[in-house]
Image (cartoon, rainbow, N blue to C red):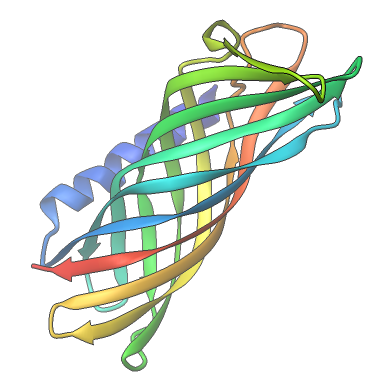
Length: 204
């Protein structure tokens, strides 16, 4: 719990930097894929669910090499389990607010960077698709999942300067949850995922 409180405080601090330190501000759009899965304890075998990431970006340059990246994005998560001849696909969707420290390496028109920091997720839906190989049905699973997910994201990417105030970017990273998203007391379930995104940013 103490670690979670510290990370929430860090999120607030980085968000405050985004608001009050604005020498270089950029807004943009991103989209990509989340290769989502969960860790389950006691151990249960789970398979991944591939979902979409769509959102807006707020990029703040504090100095030439240091910045803060935040925004708002819709992220599809989930996992699959199999038992008794039934495959259950658990689908959870979140609105996420990242607060990431960004380290930039402005070498040429192509600029590598690293980002890392906390991500707060608010669950907007949860469902379970049950299939026996011949028939399938969707049922609401909101009662099984907590409404808040909190975790960390670490990623690296490339910014491509394509115009005087326009950059394209690609990014790959790993996100993992710190909080238990499963309401039942039988297991502890935490999200994780390998994420690939790309998009465009406009410097203001």
